[in-house]
Each structure stands twice: as structure tokens, then as C-alpha cells.
Image 1 (cartoon, rainbow, N blue to C red):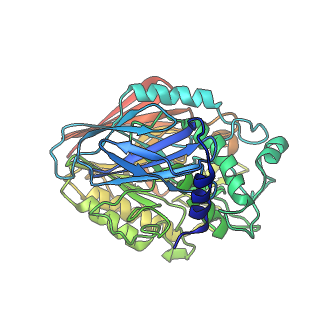
Image 2: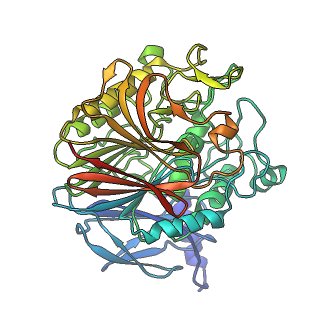
Image 3: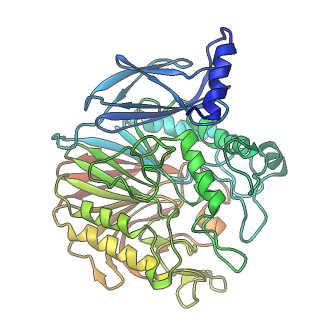
Length: 499
């Protein structure tokens, strides 16, 4: 049965006459060892589905929206470790390389990781974001370092719907230009779809354009990507996300960036996976980057499935925790790195983090002497289990790279709660933000710089540095090298050897 969107597109194609070549607005691809998934948008709707040529095959686009501007291209059955030439009407040809097959012997792999790249540059009423051009220059420099893949860890969009302590932090003229969401309407096929596109075009499509079209990307979502800050008070508790927040989060991924491709060691029935409206077998919240026998990066969204069950609360569902624990214990890759959206080790007193620390406004210091309203002790218990699982894998270095906090940092978690990790400390890195401007730093927004949480004993190798930047991870069979960049300056390097 043909749906309404396909019918409208087919009808328009029949009636359309020859038109000038369309202009591509953005392209973001991902790959595994045998499959590629490409998301693209055009400046104007197309009258017929576009065709992506990848090598000798042609892949017809599947529409992702109801207007014909957004398309996805899904190419399976590719060869591992192979560079393909891609051609798409509206942009210059480019190349994209598939990953090595999981068992292949690999000696090196370079990964670019960052967080918090979103934000509307027009906004001056609340948090101010760097201009798109300045963010773009940082990306362009990072690409000169030739990463094999890119991980964007959360906060690709800042457009909070209902602030818990203040009115929305947007200029009146920006609000008028973008519009507002109707909470009682679907996201797609209504005016809500146009609002979502105006938000996403300004913060994602215009930022990325086609600059990353030749490198596989992995986009993990965090709180702002569901259109709220993680916050809780007597007025409202923002997480877990309500229906509209979930649909907007799903809609942002559907339009702008790829889902996570299947992995044989990741169950296909995890929450947010194998949905009927996504490419077959893909995941939205939990993903795997597998690079031969050298590296496996485990990506997990800490917001969408968070629960509020006191001592039984979790940040990720138990079946996801079981998957993470099993992969951390596995021995088929030299390195297994956790990449959560919620950072371990440090806290700035926010409600939605692993730890009970809260800001004491009288002393302007973090404390646990004051109860943190709506915080769940089960979150800390799950944190301890995940850190213990990483440390217990003595055949590997225990490494966690995270986002969310607007800082660059490196530390070693020696103890968490009652769990001693000193035999194989957890090396934890804050990857660095891209877009943070005036009023966006924790010390400005919250009045305190992020520091280690009270439940953890951390050797701070690099205390939190509030500056824009990113991290390059170089994997070799015997070590992981983390290079932290402040803009274009590699100001800190950490060598993390395998035990």
C-alpha cells in the first residue's frame, strides 16, 4: 500500500517538467563494514526521489519528511575496508570508506569526538552560542587531522520547550521566525514539522553542510536533543521525556543524522531499535562503532529511557546494561570504550547527573548535605556497576569518553561508592564542546566549575577546562592516545596503555 507522502511525491514527479539541478543543503553519512546509511537534505523539495550512486550501484532515496526535502539512502552488501565513490545530484562527487570487518587485524584507528555543537547563532537572550562560521572553522581544522570516524556526543539542538525555572531563553524575533510547537498535534504532516525543520536547519544543516560527507559520523543524543534541559523542581520534572519530546528527538534524527547500523554483538531488540519507520535493524539510542579487531566504541543515550524509581531507578534499561557489561568483558577487540551522553567523574550540581551533589547557594559550593530534589539513588548504583565492569576487564584499559559538560578534562576514577577500581582505574575524558559562548559555561550558568563528584575518588590529570575544543583518540593495539584540543591547539595529551 502506498502512503500519502509517496503518492504526493509520485504525483508531483509525473506533473513536473525539467528543472534546474537541486542544491544539497547537508549530508551526513555513517558506515559499518558492509553497509552505508546517508542522510541528506535539499534547499527545496524534490519532485522525484533522488538517486545516490555508490560505486557501481544506484540507491533510490527514501523520503524522511512529508515535503520531499529530506532523504535517506541505505546501501547494504558493501565490501569491507573499501573506498567508494559517491555521486548525488546537487553536490560534487566524494569518497566514503567502509570499516574493516570485525575480525580484521588493524594497527591504527583515529576518532574525533566532541559535544555540544548546537545552538542558534541569532540568540542573545539566554546562552549565547559561537557563530556558525567559527564552529565551522574548528570542524575544518579537525578534518585536517584525518579522522577515520566522528562521534558527536549530544546537544546538537538547543531549543528547550518549557523551562523549569524561567521563560524560554530565546530572542522574541528568533521565536517569531521559528514558530512554536503545538503539543496536541503530530510532529510530521503538520505545522510542527515546519518548526522542527527551522530549528534543525539553523543548528545542524547550516553548521555541517557537506563538510563531513566523506567521513562516517555517529550522532548520540542528550537532553537538549529532546528539547528540554535536564531539570527538576516543584513545577515539573523534564525527564524521562514526554511524548512530544520523544517524537521531536526521533524527528531530529530521522531528518538530519543517521541511525546506528546493526552490529552482530548488539541485540536488535534493544529499546529504540528496529522501529518500523527506521532503516531495517538500526538503532536510535544505543549504538556500536566497531573497527576491526582494534576498537569497539559503545554509545549510549542516558536520557530517553531514564527512570524515577528511587533505589531501583536506572539511566539505561537493564537489557542495555547487560549488553554493555557483556561487551566490556569480551575479548574480540583490543579496546572497548564506553561513550555515554552523561559524564562520569565530574559534577556541576545539575539534577540529571550520576551523583547526588547539589549547589549550596549560600557557600557556592557543591554539597551532599542538602538533598537533591528528585535525584534517584539507583542512577549512582548503575554507574558503579558500569564502572566496575570496565575496571574488571583487566585485559584492557578502562576508558570512558563523554560529553554534556562544557569542558575538556581527564581523570582516573580510583573508587566509586564502595567499589575499589584502583587495580585498573577508569580513565575518563570530557571530549570538549564546540559552540559554547557567553553564559553557557557551568561556572557562568551554575556558578561553579565542574569538580569530581562526592561519591568518586578521582585523580584529576587535567581539571575541567571551560573552553571550546575537541578530542582526537588514536587507537593502537597496545594503547589509546587522547589528544585534547583547545581550538586548533593540542594542549594536552594522555597515553593510556593496555594493562
